[in-house]
Image 1 (cartoon, rainbow, N blue to C red):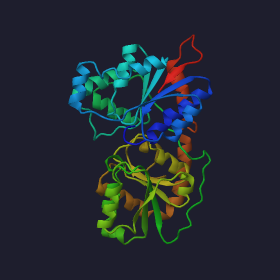
Image 2 (cartoon, rainbow, N blue to C red):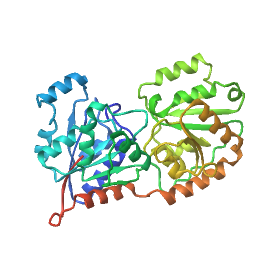
Image 3 (spheres, rainbow, N blue to C red):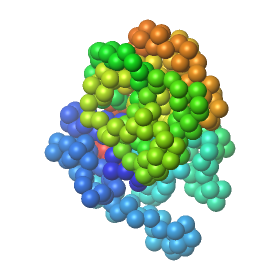
Length: 378
Protein backbone atom coordinates (compact mmCIF):
# COMPACT_ATOMS: atom_id res chain seq x y z
CA UNK A 1 0.00 0.00 0.00
CA UNK A 2 1.36 3.39 -0.97
CA UNK A 3 -1.21 5.64 0.71
CA UNK A 4 -1.05 4.47 4.33
CA UNK A 5 1.41 2.55 6.55
CA UNK A 6 -1.21 -0.16 7.00
CA UNK A 7 -4.73 -1.04 5.90
CA UNK A 8 -7.23 -3.81 5.43
CA UNK A 9 -5.68 -4.86 2.12
CA UNK A 10 -2.51 -5.91 3.97
CA UNK A 11 -4.15 -8.26 6.44
CA UNK A 12 -4.58 -11.37 4.28
CA UNK A 13 -1.03 -11.76 2.98
CA UNK A 14 0.48 -10.81 6.34
CA UNK A 15 -1.58 -13.25 8.38
CA UNK A 16 -1.03 -16.01 5.84
CA UNK A 17 2.72 -15.31 6.11
CA UNK A 18 2.48 -15.84 9.87
CA UNK A 19 0.77 -19.18 9.31
CA UNK A 20 3.49 -20.25 6.86
CA UNK A 21 6.22 -19.27 9.33
CA UNK A 22 4.52 -21.35 12.00
CA UNK A 23 4.54 -24.31 9.62
CA UNK A 24 8.29 -24.06 9.10
CA UNK A 25 8.49 -22.24 5.78
CA UNK A 26 10.94 -19.41 5.08
CA UNK A 27 9.26 -16.05 4.47
CA UNK A 28 10.63 -12.78 3.11
CA UNK A 29 8.59 -9.68 2.37
CA UNK A 30 9.09 -6.44 0.46
CA UNK A 31 6.98 -3.53 1.69
CA UNK A 32 6.83 0.25 1.46
CA UNK A 33 8.96 2.09 4.02
CA UNK A 34 7.20 4.48 6.39
CA UNK A 35 8.60 6.54 9.30
CA UNK A 36 7.32 3.83 11.65
CA UNK A 37 6.87 0.17 10.81
CA UNK A 38 3.37 -1.25 11.20
CA UNK A 39 3.06 -3.54 14.26
CA UNK A 40 1.95 -6.44 12.05
CA UNK A 41 5.19 -6.23 10.08
CA UNK A 42 7.21 -5.93 13.28
CA UNK A 43 5.53 -9.11 14.46
CA UNK A 44 6.43 -10.90 11.21
CA UNK A 45 10.09 -9.95 11.63
CA UNK A 46 10.09 -11.04 15.28
CA UNK A 47 8.85 -14.45 14.15
CA UNK A 48 11.63 -14.91 11.65
CA UNK A 49 10.59 -13.19 8.41
CA UNK A 50 13.19 -11.31 6.39
CA UNK A 51 12.19 -7.71 5.61
CA UNK A 52 13.02 -5.39 2.72
CA UNK A 53 11.60 -1.86 2.81
CA UNK A 54 11.45 0.15 -0.41
CA UNK A 55 11.04 3.87 -0.95
CA UNK A 56 7.50 5.14 -1.46
CA UNK A 57 8.63 8.05 -3.59
CA UNK A 58 6.97 8.07 -6.98
CA UNK A 59 8.22 9.44 -10.27
CA UNK A 60 6.16 10.89 -13.09
CA UNK A 61 4.83 8.57 -15.76
CA UNK A 62 6.93 10.09 -18.57
CA UNK A 63 10.14 9.81 -16.55
CA UNK A 64 9.33 6.25 -15.51
CA UNK A 65 8.60 5.23 -19.10
CA UNK A 66 11.88 6.78 -20.27
CA UNK A 67 13.84 4.92 -17.60
CA UNK A 68 12.03 1.70 -18.43
CA UNK A 69 13.04 2.02 -22.07
CA UNK A 70 16.62 2.20 -20.81
CA UNK A 71 15.86 -0.83 -18.61
CA UNK A 72 16.79 1.17 -15.51
CA UNK A 73 13.58 0.59 -13.56
CA UNK A 74 11.89 -2.21 -15.46
CA UNK A 75 13.40 -4.92 -13.29
CA UNK A 76 13.83 -2.92 -10.09
CA UNK A 77 12.86 -5.83 -7.83
CA UNK A 78 15.50 -8.17 -9.27
CA UNK A 79 18.19 -7.47 -6.60
CA UNK A 80 15.76 -8.31 -3.80
CA UNK A 81 14.54 -11.45 -5.57
CA UNK A 82 18.10 -12.62 -6.19
CA UNK A 83 18.91 -12.05 -2.54
CA UNK A 84 15.77 -13.78 -1.24
CA UNK A 85 15.83 -16.61 -3.81
CA UNK A 86 12.15 -17.52 -3.25
CA UNK A 87 10.52 -20.66 -4.61
CA UNK A 88 7.29 -18.70 -4.97
CA UNK A 89 6.16 -15.07 -4.73
CA UNK A 90 2.77 -13.74 -3.62
CA UNK A 91 2.05 -10.27 -5.04
CA UNK A 92 -0.60 -8.41 -3.05
CA UNK A 93 -2.28 -5.48 -4.81
CA UNK A 94 -4.43 -3.13 -2.74
CA UNK A 95 -6.05 -1.84 -5.96
CA UNK A 96 -6.24 -3.08 -9.55
CA UNK A 97 -4.27 -0.02 -10.73
CA UNK A 98 -1.20 -0.84 -8.59
CA UNK A 99 2.11 -1.03 -10.47
CA UNK A 100 2.71 -4.62 -11.74
CA UNK A 101 6.48 -4.28 -12.20
CA UNK A 102 7.20 -6.94 -9.58
CA UNK A 103 5.58 -9.48 -11.92
CA UNK A 104 7.99 -8.48 -14.70
CA UNK A 105 10.91 -9.09 -12.35
CA UNK A 106 9.58 -12.51 -11.36
CA UNK A 107 9.18 -13.55 -14.99
CA UNK A 108 12.67 -12.30 -15.86
CA UNK A 109 14.12 -14.60 -13.19
CA UNK A 110 11.77 -17.49 -13.84
CA UNK A 111 10.21 -17.27 -10.37
CA UNK A 112 6.56 -18.45 -10.26
CA UNK A 113 4.12 -16.06 -8.62
CA UNK A 114 0.49 -15.54 -7.67
CA UNK A 115 -1.46 -12.29 -7.48
CA UNK A 116 -4.03 -11.46 -4.82
CA UNK A 117 -6.17 -8.42 -5.64
CA UNK A 118 -7.87 -6.71 -2.73
CA UNK A 119 -10.05 -4.11 -4.46
CA UNK A 120 -11.23 -2.98 -7.88
CA UNK A 121 -13.65 -0.25 -8.82
CA UNK A 122 -15.38 0.60 -12.10
CA UNK A 123 -14.37 4.27 -11.86
CA UNK A 124 -10.60 3.74 -12.08
CA UNK A 125 -9.37 2.49 -15.43
CA UNK A 126 -5.87 1.31 -16.18
CA UNK A 127 -4.10 3.68 -18.56
CA UNK A 128 -4.49 2.30 -22.11
CA UNK A 129 -0.73 2.66 -22.60
CA UNK A 130 -0.13 0.20 -19.76
CA UNK A 131 -2.84 -2.38 -20.50
CA UNK A 132 -0.47 -4.88 -22.12
CA UNK A 133 1.87 -4.74 -19.13
CA UNK A 134 -0.99 -5.42 -16.72
CA UNK A 135 -2.52 -8.10 -18.93
CA UNK A 136 0.81 -9.92 -19.11
CA UNK A 137 1.27 -9.75 -15.33
CA UNK A 138 -2.08 -11.41 -14.65
CA UNK A 139 -1.95 -13.85 -17.57
CA UNK A 140 1.41 -15.28 -16.48
CA UNK A 141 0.48 -15.70 -12.81
CA UNK A 142 0.30 -19.26 -11.55
CA UNK A 143 -2.97 -18.23 -9.90
CA UNK A 144 -4.97 -15.04 -9.45
CA UNK A 145 -6.82 -14.65 -6.16
CA UNK A 146 -9.72 -12.22 -5.79
CA UNK A 147 -11.74 -11.37 -2.68
CA UNK A 148 -14.98 -11.03 -4.65
CA UNK A 149 -16.44 -12.11 -7.98
CA UNK A 150 -17.29 -8.46 -8.64
CA UNK A 151 -13.60 -7.52 -8.47
CA UNK A 152 -12.62 -10.31 -10.85
CA UNK A 153 -15.24 -9.20 -13.37
CA UNK A 154 -14.13 -5.57 -13.16
CA UNK A 155 -10.49 -6.48 -13.75
CA UNK A 156 -11.25 -8.86 -16.62
CA UNK A 157 -13.38 -6.18 -18.26
CA UNK A 158 -10.76 -3.50 -17.65
CA UNK A 159 -8.03 -5.60 -19.28
CA UNK A 160 -10.21 -7.42 -21.83
CA UNK A 161 -8.86 -10.70 -20.54
CA UNK A 162 -10.18 -14.04 -19.32
CA UNK A 163 -8.50 -15.49 -16.24
CA UNK A 164 -9.30 -19.20 -15.95
CA UNK A 165 -6.60 -19.67 -13.30
CA UNK A 166 -8.39 -17.64 -10.67
CA UNK A 167 -10.45 -18.15 -7.53
CA UNK A 168 -12.19 -16.28 -4.73
CA UNK A 169 -10.64 -16.17 -1.26
CA UNK A 170 -11.88 -14.74 2.03
CA UNK A 171 -10.39 -11.88 4.05
CA UNK A 172 -9.46 -12.08 7.74
CA UNK A 173 -11.17 -10.10 10.49
CA UNK A 174 -10.13 -8.68 13.85
CA UNK A 175 -13.06 -9.74 16.03
CA UNK A 176 -13.51 -13.08 17.74
CA UNK A 177 -15.28 -15.84 15.87
CA UNK A 178 -17.91 -15.89 18.64
CA UNK A 179 -18.11 -12.09 18.97
CA UNK A 180 -21.41 -10.93 20.45
CA UNK A 181 -21.14 -7.38 21.79
CA UNK A 182 -24.06 -6.11 23.84
CA UNK A 183 -26.78 -4.09 22.16
CA UNK A 184 -26.42 -0.30 22.69
CA UNK A 185 -28.34 1.08 25.63
CA UNK A 186 -29.12 4.40 23.91
CA UNK A 187 -32.84 5.07 23.75
CA UNK A 188 -32.86 8.70 22.58
CA UNK A 189 -30.84 8.39 19.37
CA UNK A 190 -30.17 5.77 16.75
CA UNK A 191 -26.46 5.52 16.18
CA UNK A 192 -24.70 4.36 13.02
CA UNK A 193 -20.97 3.81 12.58
CA UNK A 194 -19.04 4.18 9.34
CA UNK A 195 -15.85 2.18 9.89
CA UNK A 196 -13.44 2.97 7.06
CA UNK A 197 -10.38 5.06 6.34
CA UNK A 198 -11.36 8.65 5.61
CA UNK A 199 -11.05 8.51 1.83
CA UNK A 200 -13.85 10.07 -0.16
CA UNK A 201 -12.88 8.53 -3.51
CA UNK A 202 -13.49 4.97 -2.34
CA UNK A 203 -15.30 5.06 1.02
CA UNK A 204 -17.62 7.96 0.08
CA UNK A 205 -18.01 9.67 3.43
CA UNK A 206 -18.78 12.79 1.39
CA UNK A 207 -22.13 11.18 0.54
CA UNK A 208 -22.98 10.86 4.22
CA UNK A 209 -22.49 14.60 4.55
CA UNK A 210 -24.61 15.32 1.46
CA UNK A 211 -27.46 13.10 2.60
CA UNK A 212 -27.58 14.24 6.21
CA UNK A 213 -27.72 17.86 5.04
CA UNK A 214 -31.28 17.16 3.87
CA UNK A 215 -33.95 18.72 6.10
CA UNK A 216 -35.67 15.42 6.86
CA UNK A 217 -32.47 13.90 8.29
CA UNK A 218 -31.66 17.02 10.31
CA UNK A 219 -34.96 16.60 12.15
CA UNK A 220 -34.51 12.91 13.02
CA UNK A 221 -32.74 11.44 16.08
CA UNK A 222 -29.98 9.84 13.99
CA UNK A 223 -26.24 10.16 14.62
CA UNK A 224 -23.37 8.85 12.51
CA UNK A 225 -19.81 8.40 13.78
CA UNK A 226 -16.92 7.98 11.35
CA UNK A 227 -14.13 5.72 12.55
CA UNK A 228 -10.89 5.26 10.62
CA UNK A 229 -7.46 6.65 9.82
CA UNK A 230 -7.05 9.75 7.69
CA UNK A 231 -6.34 8.90 4.06
CA UNK A 232 -6.38 12.52 2.92
CA UNK A 233 -9.90 13.84 3.51
CA UNK A 234 -10.19 14.34 7.27
CA UNK A 235 -9.68 18.11 7.18
CA UNK A 236 -12.17 18.37 4.33
CA UNK A 237 -14.65 16.34 6.38
CA UNK A 238 -14.25 18.56 9.43
CA UNK A 239 -14.62 21.71 7.37
CA UNK A 240 -17.79 20.32 5.78
CA UNK A 241 -19.32 19.59 9.17
CA UNK A 242 -18.60 23.14 10.31
CA UNK A 243 -19.87 24.79 7.13
CA UNK A 244 -23.12 22.82 7.01
CA UNK A 245 -23.73 22.75 10.75
CA UNK A 246 -23.66 18.96 11.03
CA UNK A 247 -21.45 18.49 14.08
CA UNK A 248 -24.41 17.26 16.16
CA UNK A 249 -25.28 14.61 13.58
CA UNK A 250 -21.88 13.49 12.29
CA UNK A 251 -18.74 13.04 14.39
CA UNK A 252 -15.24 11.72 13.80
CA UNK A 253 -14.36 9.09 16.38
CA UNK A 254 -10.71 8.47 15.51
CA UNK A 255 -9.14 5.03 15.15
CA UNK A 256 -10.47 2.14 17.22
CA UNK A 257 -8.30 -0.73 18.42
CA UNK A 258 -11.25 -2.67 19.81
CA UNK A 259 -13.92 -3.26 17.18
CA UNK A 260 -16.10 -5.42 19.41
CA UNK A 261 -16.24 -2.65 22.00
CA UNK A 262 -16.99 -0.14 19.26
CA UNK A 263 -20.03 -2.11 18.11
CA UNK A 264 -21.43 -2.21 21.62
CA UNK A 265 -22.14 1.50 21.14
CA UNK A 266 -23.76 1.48 17.67
CA UNK A 267 -26.89 -0.02 16.15
CA UNK A 268 -25.82 -0.59 12.53
CA UNK A 269 -23.07 -0.06 9.95
CA UNK A 270 -23.28 2.69 7.32
CA UNK A 271 -20.76 2.11 4.50
CA UNK A 272 -21.61 4.02 1.28
CA UNK A 273 -18.51 2.85 -0.63
CA UNK A 274 -17.90 3.57 -4.30
CA UNK A 275 -15.48 0.62 -4.49
CA UNK A 276 -14.65 -2.34 -2.26
CA UNK A 277 -13.15 -5.78 -2.35
CA UNK A 278 -14.30 -7.76 0.67
CA UNK A 279 -14.62 -5.07 3.30
CA UNK A 280 -13.21 -6.07 6.69
CA UNK A 281 -15.51 -3.60 8.42
CA UNK A 282 -18.52 -5.21 6.74
CA UNK A 283 -17.43 -8.69 7.83
CA UNK A 284 -16.76 -7.51 11.38
CA UNK A 285 -20.04 -5.62 11.71
CA UNK A 286 -22.00 -8.69 10.63
CA UNK A 287 -19.93 -10.93 12.92
CA UNK A 288 -20.86 -8.57 15.76
CA UNK A 289 -24.57 -8.78 14.96
CA UNK A 290 -24.97 -5.39 13.31
CA UNK A 291 -27.00 -4.96 10.12
CA UNK A 292 -25.07 -3.24 7.31
CA UNK A 293 -26.41 -0.36 5.25
CA UNK A 294 -24.09 -0.33 2.27
CA UNK A 295 -23.66 -0.33 -1.50
CA UNK A 296 -23.68 -3.21 -3.95
CA UNK A 297 -19.93 -3.27 -4.51
CA UNK A 298 -17.31 -5.94 -3.95
CA UNK A 299 -18.53 -8.87 -1.87
CA UNK A 300 -21.54 -7.08 -0.35
CA UNK A 301 -24.34 -8.67 -2.38
CA UNK A 302 -22.82 -12.13 -1.82
CA UNK A 303 -23.06 -11.68 1.96
CA UNK A 304 -26.16 -9.52 2.39
CA UNK A 305 -29.78 -10.34 1.68
CA UNK A 306 -31.39 -6.98 1.03
CA UNK A 307 -34.10 -6.09 3.55
CA UNK A 308 -33.44 -9.34 5.44
CA UNK A 309 -30.08 -9.00 7.17
CA UNK A 310 -29.07 -5.60 5.83
CA UNK A 311 -29.78 -2.95 3.23
CA UNK A 312 -28.16 -2.58 -0.20
CA UNK A 313 -28.02 0.49 -2.42
CA UNK A 314 -27.44 -0.21 -6.13
CA UNK A 315 -24.61 2.33 -6.29
CA UNK A 316 -22.94 5.14 -4.39
CA UNK A 317 -24.88 8.31 -5.23
CA UNK A 318 -26.48 10.77 -2.85
CA UNK A 319 -29.96 9.88 -4.13
CA UNK A 320 -29.45 6.12 -3.71
CA UNK A 321 -27.82 6.47 -0.29
CA UNK A 322 -30.77 8.59 0.80
CA UNK A 323 -33.15 5.92 -0.51
CA UNK A 324 -31.42 3.01 1.23
CA UNK A 325 -31.04 4.97 4.46
CA UNK A 326 -34.75 5.83 4.33
CA UNK A 327 -35.62 2.14 3.93
CA UNK A 328 -33.41 1.31 6.86
CA UNK A 329 -34.84 4.12 8.99
CA UNK A 330 -38.39 2.92 8.47
CA UNK A 331 -37.32 -0.46 9.86
CA UNK A 332 -35.07 0.78 12.66
CA UNK A 333 -36.98 -1.22 15.24
CA UNK A 334 -35.96 -4.37 13.30
CA UNK A 335 -32.23 -3.59 13.28
CA UNK A 336 -31.45 -5.84 16.22
CA UNK A 337 -33.20 -8.87 14.71
CA UNK A 338 -31.67 -8.15 11.32
CA UNK A 339 -28.25 -7.96 12.96
CA UNK A 340 -28.77 -11.39 14.46
CA UNK A 341 -29.57 -12.74 11.00
CA UNK A 342 -26.49 -10.97 9.64
CA UNK A 343 -24.34 -12.74 12.24
CA UNK A 344 -25.76 -16.10 11.16
CA UNK A 345 -25.31 -15.35 7.46
CA UNK A 346 -21.68 -14.24 7.66
CA UNK A 347 -20.72 -17.35 9.59
CA UNK A 348 -22.42 -19.55 7.01
CA UNK A 349 -21.02 -17.77 3.92
CA UNK A 350 -17.53 -16.75 4.99
CA UNK A 351 -14.52 -18.70 6.25
CA UNK A 352 -13.79 -18.57 9.97
CA UNK A 353 -10.08 -19.24 9.29
CA UNK A 354 -9.26 -17.20 6.16
CA UNK A 355 -5.52 -16.82 6.83
CA UNK A 356 -5.06 -20.58 7.19
CA UNK A 357 -7.18 -21.20 4.10
CA UNK A 358 -5.11 -18.76 2.05
CA UNK A 359 -1.86 -20.30 3.27
CA UNK A 360 -3.19 -23.70 2.16
CA UNK A 361 -4.03 -22.31 -1.28
CA UNK A 362 -0.58 -20.73 -1.66
CA UNK A 363 1.08 -24.05 -0.87
CA UNK A 364 -1.25 -25.93 -3.21
CA UNK A 365 -0.52 -23.57 -6.11
CA UNK A 366 3.22 -23.51 -5.45
CA UNK A 367 3.66 -27.17 -4.54
CA UNK A 368 6.19 -29.37 -6.26
CA UNK A 369 6.46 -33.14 -5.82
CA UNK A 370 9.88 -32.97 -4.13
CA UNK A 371 9.55 -29.81 -2.04
CA UNK A 372 8.35 -30.05 1.55
CA UNK A 373 9.37 -26.66 2.90
CA UNK A 374 9.40 -23.55 0.75
CA UNK A 375 10.87 -20.11 0.65
CA UNK A 376 8.04 -17.70 0.04
CA UNK A 377 8.11 -14.00 -0.63
CA UNK A 378 5.39 -11.38 -0.45
